[in-house]
Image 1 (tube, helix red, strand yellow):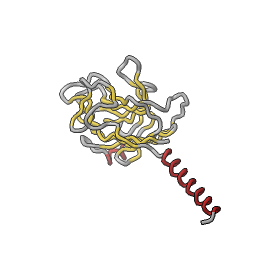
Image 2: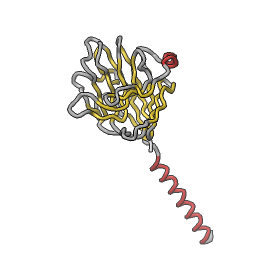
Image 3: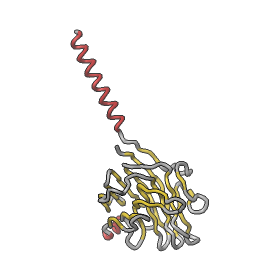
Length: 214
């Protein structure tokens, strides 16, 4: 090989290595937020409100009323991501949700932020703004949701937050595609698992997996 061809080959190899390394640095990171056996990486009322059972986080109780809203939250904040959570609700009047881009209210048990809502009569698949605007930001098509919802059994939320866009899918059905119109709303925060105050009920969560987006 002459000297010019050697230089061309070396240059080509350098470009290839750069592209591979560059792609790797931009690759998304995926991992479990809940290990199925401990509350490592989470904070909340783990003495009374939340426990671990059969590899799942369980909030609430079927033997007593749930006195108030409680949230088990990640210690780390997230901005752009795809979150997968399997869940089931047990008990008449059960209500719960998965908080996104949320924050604890100082010296209070509540949090503020987006919530992938769940529960009867019409909360399944909706996007709610917990303790902030205190309203449903985007409603789901309840009739379509009823066709895919598994009551008293495991369901899955896939939640995509990217920029000002929040998308919810329930058991493969997209229920919400929302773009935040208010520039003052912060687009990062913790992820929380909720049990809503009310009648005896339980919210079960497992296989909580997040994929960070660029």
